[in-house]
Image (cartoon, rainbow, N blue to C red; front, top):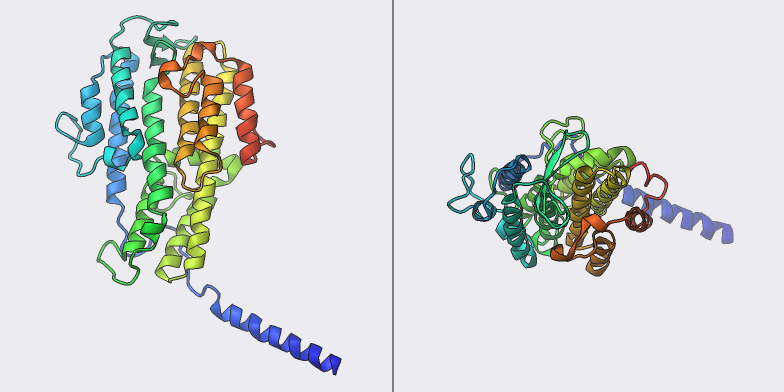
Amino acid sequence: MKLYHLLFALFLLGLIACEDDDNANDYDVPATYSFENVDYSGQTERILMLSEIKAYMSQGNAGAELESSRLKAMFSNEPGAQFSQTYNKQLKNKTFEAQREYFEYLMDKIEQASQSDGQATEGMSGVVTSNDGAKSYLVGQTGVEYAQLIEKGLMGACFYYQATSVYLGEDRMNADNESVEEDSGTAMEHHWDESFGYFGVPKTFPSSLDGLAFWGVYCNRRDPFLSSNNMLMDAFLSGRAAISNKDYETRDESIRIVRTEWEKVSAATAINYLNTATREFDDNAIKFHALSEAIAFVYSLKFNVEKTVSNEQVDAWIAEFAGSANVDEMNLYETTVEDMQSVKDQLSTVFGFDDFKDEL
């Protein structure tokens, strides 16, 4: 009888396994973002708008005076922006609300810095040139390159925030998934597509690297260590296919992967710039440029709804190597190699990069 019960139990387990197989994903996940009814044109516009802001700010590196009024108009897409084309969107209203004034303040700071016509020294804004004469950057009185805090900061507080916390958030992922709108799909599909749009990669990524922008660029740079290209793209593909097939368990797992892997790209990029600043410690131009980027990528860690560390920890890391988390109290002239190494080690331990932190 015991043998009979054992055989019967194994038979039932076999039936359950067959049922599980029947309920397994029976839909295809495409190799490229080639779904029907996809539209993330708004995200494409915002990427182009930030590209134009970046290009305008870069004129300060050649000694041009910048206008904060124009930068603010570009931020909110108002008259005076002088964009090269007409845009229907804006960056300001998609930026984390509590940080909008911060970016406008940085725009005031970069205007002030650009009004100096001399070489930058401690206590004086201006352009600082690399030892080999190849690179020049506009920095403030304490070595901070405001252009990097604005550009990379908006990558975090706007693009990363919207992609990971808004469009993949509960409100947008609880939207209608029945009614299909031509060219944009269901509301849920459309929200997923908008998240993907902020990633800044072509639909054929990573087999094609043409047109990488912002986060797409940095994801690709970190790929040799993180395998981030396939990890993120596969998650976006599987999640979109899952939504179309109402497989919400796979969708939710894809959301988790997008948030986790994108966060790692930001943390690893911060370490990359701390490595650069350490390696080029005796070249103020390269060091200040790299440290300013490191500040922005650490700062960006705040904007993931499932972030690994608290905002207080983020501020503590910035303060440790920049002197303060308050931009007016930072002083990159006083940053030490030990400061950078300490933050690098902490980031590496938290995010699991100890085996290759020196190579990032």
